[in-house]
Image (cartoon, rainbow, N blue to C red; front, side, top):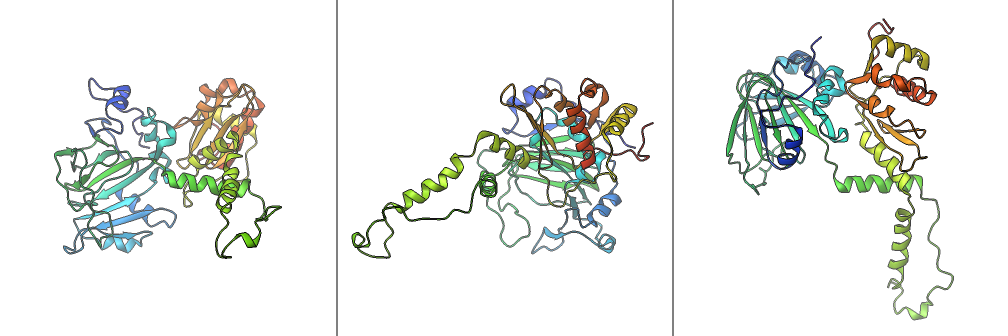
Amino acid sequence: MIDLPRTLRWPDGLDAARFLRDFWQRRPLLLPGAFPGIRSPVEPDELAGLACDPDVESRIVHEHDPKRPWQVSHGPFDEAVFANLPETHWTLLVQDVDKHVPAVAELLACFDFLPAWRLDDIMISWAEDGGSVGPHLDQYDVFLVQVQGHRRWRIVTRPNPPTGILPDLDLRILRDFEPDQDWLLGPGDVLYLPPGVPHWGIAEGPCMTWSVGLRAPAWHELAADWFQHLLETRADDSRWRDPPEPEPAASIPDPAELPASLPRIMRSEIERLVADADEDLFRRWLGATLTEQKPNIALLPPEPAWPGAEVLSLLRARGELRRDGASRLLYLRGVGADEPDLLFANGDCHALPAGRCGFLPALCRRPGLLAADAERWLADAACVALLAALFNAGHFVIPDDGLPD
């Protein structure tokens, strides 16, 4: 088994605090040798195998048509597709590999200087010589980790770069791209890019790059989801009723004219639905939303379910329970001394009675729950019940033998 690095090595004179102060969401940063000796637990042929799985999101970008370069085909792919690919100028991209290969998810622990809710996924790309996805920009932060081979990154650091795109292409390729930085990354090097920085990475020989992407929810998407949640949980079946003393028809010159009071009345009723939603409802919705996985990402619960005592026995015998790559856990402390603490797990909300919040950081930590961190809580029935519920929902990996040592 290949062990991934557990920490990110900063260059001399730089640490996480300075990175967040001077670079985060401000300017690009090259981190040479950030992951010395890194090796991928996923080989190129295994990555191709994932791309053949209908539950895995994947793409192949081709660059062989001079009139329409960067053509995209979407998976799942047949094995014959890979056998017929040319020798150069193509790229395979597989999303959410951390959800499908738990060993890949372990790299996320190296980014614990960032809020866990912001970490989205690890996309792995395999490119043959000359392969790329063209000059483009992203609306989110990304750490580009070179794992095998070499990739040359050209980026634009000037303020307000042009953002126009070429028409009639499968990807959003920038029409005007004039880089002012040029870096060749080898195994272990990392390039951080904040949102909106134009970049173009081209493989120099076969190479593998891991893209650690950050979540950046769009406000309109959050608002739409919140309003939909309100409609599903708070709205009743009541309908419009005319006021007790409607305006007489004689006072309205034309039947097609809306009464002057109608917009005010309807707007106030709609706004009341939002205003009446209390803080607890919003907190529970937000945590559930931020941990919800894509429809194609699923946990595999053990069958049959394990009693809490057996889960404890496994944890103590092994010393830890490894998190499944598809597990997404976050928590919120109760707003008052007597309010329950909330754990959010892949869209579900679990309430833990007050006074036990110290258990939640250990539970949410990657790559897994350490028995030493949890021991003081393992005599508490509520904590054990929560651990068993998560285990039986598939958030932790069952060892191959399924038994404690």
